[in-house]
Amino acid sequence: MQDVTDLPFMRVMAHYGAPDYFFTEFFRVHAQSRPEKHILRSITESQTGRPVFAQLIGEDIGHMVRTVQELLHYPVAGIDLNMGCPAPKIYKKNVGGGLLRDPAKIDELLGALRAAVPGLFTVKMRLGFDSTVNYERILALIAKHSVDLLSVHGRTVKEMYRSEVHYDFIAVAARTVRCPVLANGNVTSAARATAVLAETGAAGVMIGRHAIRNPWIFRQTREQLAGLAVFQPTLADVREYIDRLYRETNHPGCPESAHVAKMKKYLNFVGQSVDADGAFLHDMRRAMAEADLFAVCDRHLLTEPTKPFANEPYPGIIARPNCETPIQSCSLDSVTA
Image (cartoon, rainbow, N blue to C red; front, side, top):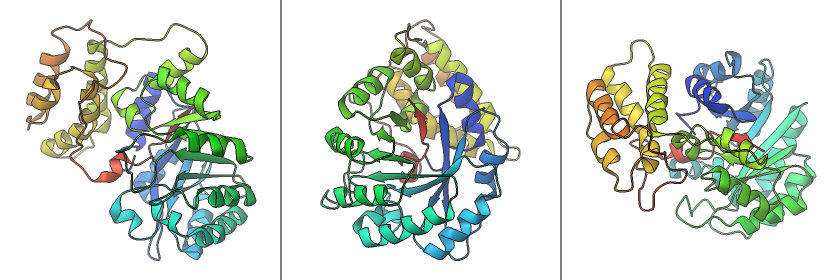
């Protein structure tokens, strides 16, 4: 997710059980753009032991190709094209999910990028912009341009994250394109990942928001698929996760108030599985200083430290990130198979 999947966050995920590979935050591509240095760090300084794909968002073919050529000087695992971001300020520029309105443009862009990428070229998409009318046509273009991996979020752009996920459409992609397909959308737990794989026939799953809530989800999914006992974190484990996340993401010179605000973005997701009545979220959102924030964590997580952390979000407990919508876009993009 944008503003989430940076180098410190990748380190935290790797500590609890890394995904098979990571996708960076998206590099914004336009006439004046150059690959953002803080995103490059997640490629050049990664010590997670996992491949890292460079994700691009843009629509100008010349500048997209130029950016690919620049990124190929770095140790990227491959190049990923974002055709799924549902944030209005993104799709209104005809990038991200906005591209799904224009199959002819997609055809041209995929062809240019495929020619520019000598190694792995991957694509992330939704089912369409406001309908699925172009879906199978776009899948045909994925096959035409020999895309190496396709991730499909089972909603349209306009459905954002509100509707049910249309896994039947992901199954269509898994049956019809020649490359492996990753299923994305409401993969909330290891049990859910197993069910989604069975329902869609996908090669793997892509997990975004729920990896913020539960950093053990990749480990748990591997254990579930292997028929092993699945690790069950406790509230004390969650308290340790929050402490690690705070330390790893605390940049030198960052004001305490700013870092506390950033932590609330993460904790809005974590809190979905702490308690059924949302008391942790209520109190956490009102903390303004580091000491207040950790006092809330201690009160809610260490009073009953051995209580299991819920594998699924509690019904009716909604994450309300205090940040721009792209934190919920499918670009954290961690994958497990």
